[in-house]
Image (cartoon, rainbow, N blue to C red):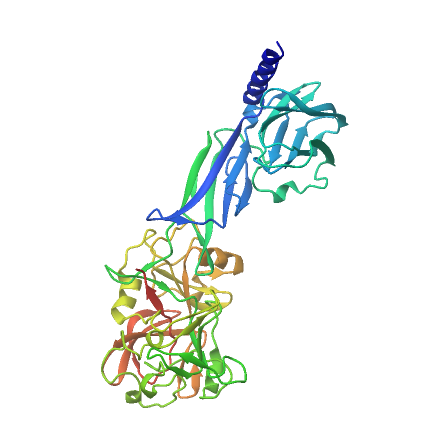
Length: 498
């Protein structure tokens, strides 16, 4: 008879849970476009229907939503009982929401229907917070009984607390910061609400955004956040990723002591190469201090001045034939800055070995800016980022939903076409965009056009005296302009996507 009673209690509890506390669990995982696993840093869940947002932070990958359509109502107002974390390791936190002051009874039953513990107390309207400790790993049911109804929450304990107990922690926020726990949401939700879910991961030490999923949510579901790593097509068959900033060189690594770095022939050369810490960073007038022993940084270089064959990055000769590889291209040769040199990458805090990076050819610059087909049909836009004028290049998979760029694919657009602040740029950069600052150029030791013109070398020769250069300003853009080899221009490197 006793066993029958326990079974009947268990059945009632399960029915009560179905009737009063229906939860929807969203389980998230990440993958690239090829289906390879990608670890999520976080997932942002936005309830479009009710205008709230929750964010799960790794290692949390499950968000539990309490469906208010399945919770009993008291005098037209909604009550709820939620637990987090759940499953839990010995101790779980309970948030009970009631629309009015109540005399509350909390009881915990095991899976056999046996009463494990109980607590009785008066509580005020609003959120009441409790801690439930359970010593044995198994499934339990928490029953919250008031004079107006009953709420039931299923508890899954995976550990040992050392004792069984229920501790009252107070009303409202109390001593427990519910909003910092992202495993279970206390936000209002009903089946059919429209949710927008976006994943974030880290690639090359920067945040990358997944393709967003937006749908009406009616049931528990496993959701895969798909990350397309932000790539740029530079021909019909070649895709690349850009370096995190413009190339820079210093004889002393920006300090007072001379430094060396590894080069392609397994020896070392003077100075340190690095990428600019931010995409908008430029040296500007500081390039006029160019010298073999200058302790600062420079970022404007004559063509092919990788340091190979006495073609040094600090050269100031005005003779074009002193630069590069006679009338040959520098593609794939040691005259290419990225091919010859080890380069420090501040985004990853590592030094990339020689040959990791390379310079785009004239045809690749042209294809990138004039020809390639992107998801958004946008290839580039001019703008001002963090107060710096320049060119914004979007990846192949760019989504217009990230940020609405104006005057796109327009060579005659001005710098004011897009004024982008820090918050907006963080989102744009996370989605994979590249920014080429208008860093000017240098002739001899004279620096000019800072902030008004961008000049970026290609790896393609125009003969002994000239080479092709990407040139843009506030009214034009030419990916295949000519530049005298002695003209010092910016260098932005790429690496091929394998």
